[in-house]
Length: 123
Image 1 (cartoon, rainbow, N blue to C red):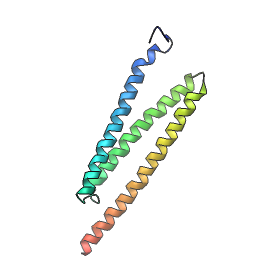
Image 2: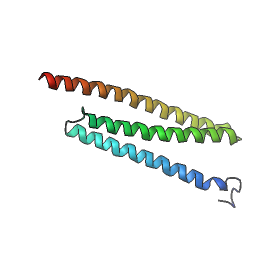
Image 3: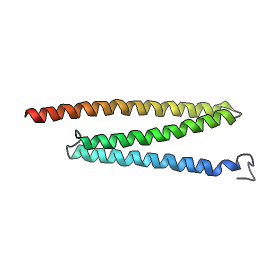
Image 4: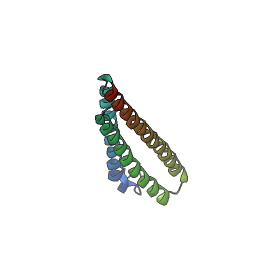
């Protein structure tokens, strides 16, 4: 890599670390979704335990978003061609929309959990 592109050789390890971090974040999200599906199967999705998994999903996606924000900032500052920065900004926008969607779904889960608890108390 250093022979082919000597200007970018110093980016090899930072980009590898960022990529590994994103993969770990994605795996955390997958495990949490798996746990939520298990709660659905056991009919325990409307409990406080489900909120823990949704919060972990939000933290993992949020951490990946913050790192992506840093990468986009570095690319915008150092890039000669704006195309890569624009594509990364679009990806950042898509991840932002996904985070907001999960926040809305978390609020709905909280509301449904409260309603289920109230209904269980009535019955």
